[in-house]
Length: 249
Ligand SMILES: *[C@@H]1O[C@H](CO)[C@@H](O)[C@H](O)[C@H]1NC(C)=O
Image 1 (tube, rainbow, N blue to C red):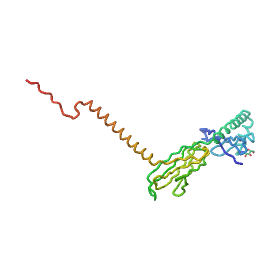
Image 2 (image 1 turned 60 degrees about the horizontal axis):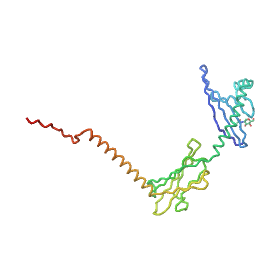
Image 3 (image 1 turned 120 degrees about the horizontal axis):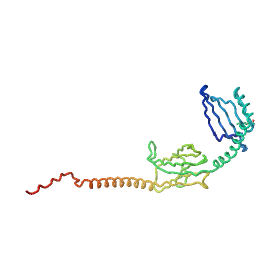
Image 4 (image 1 turned 135 degrees about the vertical axis):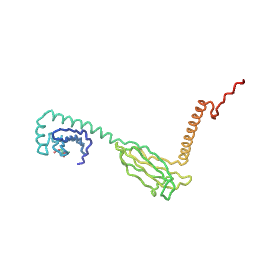
């Protein structure tokens, strides 16, 4: 049976001064491959599982001496059992919601960059970065004039972002030739067909020039404005003392 634990809904901490007990309640919604939902409420004392409520069983079961005593009390308490039934209902509504999120493919954003390669027999290193996709399965390949390149390619694994989404990076070391077309091809469940991202070395170098030009221009404006401001504040910018002319006597 393929059982996945979906939620860890609650962690409770209780401290009693006398014994400094560490109580931990773990509420689990589990779903099975047959789409059954099982709710499991587990009670830990100092990290030891004392007992649990399993919705299939419908009552508390104790695993330790004290746990069995607690289970006996809880099973006599109708309001506790009602609460646990409610928790099962919550699981039944939450699991399909989570399943819906999980069944939706999320389209990646792709970025293609190049660097000067170091420690390589090739002068350039192209990086195809694929961000924020779901599910994990993805294919990132390199095409040179429409033909797949397999040598001098390295890829990272699909790295989890920690928010259901993944990212991956593929590296191609190459010696660019004039007129050729290099592309990164991404195949993913969120695409109808594979998507191509073409590397445009001219655009990339122009973009660098534009960036540098913009910085230089901004610096120029800043210095010009500062200069103008100082000039206005100090009517005698060259620093010569104006010696008042002696009144002719
Ligand atoms: C809940 O109880 C049922 C019936 O005894 C059992 O088959 C199942 O494995 C239990 N689930 C868990 C997670 O312990």
